[in-house]
Length: 485
Image (cartoon, rainbow, N blue to C red):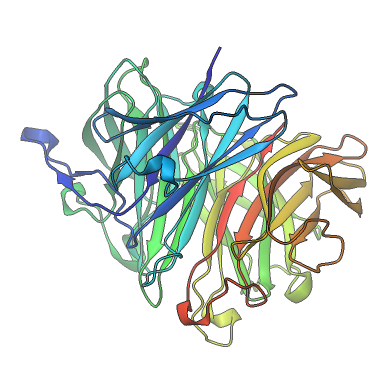
């Protein structure tokens, strides 16, 4: 049986078209992202099984019309990965535009999407990444905890994909303040089978509040048809003082435990913020955040309420900082049901008031496993390097090993409970076994079956050939969450 993974909104190039609908459904649907840039996407597919896989990818336009099927001639080997860049010669017949895609395979695969404008001769230069959604994980309702409309110059949009190949649906969205008060319910209109469309928070037809006080809210998108489950992402961007873009996946449900495998407090100029939302519709969420240095802080969230916890510039708690300022956290809810997103950047106050473009978001994983799939690890691959942050969520100290699909391996020993192992894939970095130019997949494993979670961070820096001072400040940072094996 073929497995389907939806990869929402693959932006090959920026073509914005506003579609309007009559009567009470006059709300703008966009066929491309509103984030500024000229975009190019790459799809990363990893075969997570011990058998070869036959893979194909269908590309659909915003009306659900199939525009191209890409089928590699060679099988995807057991444990191997495949990178498909949408400017390859195989895609010359695919017009510039934004597409939804469905990855099909004879074996279990995972997929992620990396999109950037950094190869363009002129700015803005920025990048983002997110995970593909297994068809079995699509749902009738999606939760987005962090949405912006002119909130300290941040804006956002949601991109929703109908994963059904047979049924259309109608979408509605509920917007909530950070305190959980409903702002309004909006009818977003129809979404055809196989299609994806974009709704920008700044669209005046949505009528949402704006500004530093009111321009932040949660969103819940609902499909009217149980036979048409949806997947989706949220894109976040800022155009001043420089261009920055990030992306995260909509959540289908909450949980009682979340992990944040990568947090920063003035770590080489980076700082992070953890946003938690209570998605339970009737019960107030209570719980605690436990950082890897043992410091805790509590939260209480009304239904649909969200709160952001910054890890830098703290006065009420003490967290690791500087070269020790890369750490993790576990979030535990004793009531309610929670989801979480981490965003991090290099703010001016951590960089001698300099403007730095780096910005990214990732979904907090809720499921840990002794083995974790890493679909893409880079070592000066076209100027990109990868840091893999692996969190030991267990109760025992462990060694963590990355085993790559080229049979090389890297082990970091003595990672304590709620500890972190950072595998920094830079040429010449101690322990890094990958050759310059490598692009591989990997599996992270615990030596004594401790449960792990991980995030994958791609970036560039001045020691690499593709680094361009002429493109600064720019946002080369792409981050996404690894998948339990």
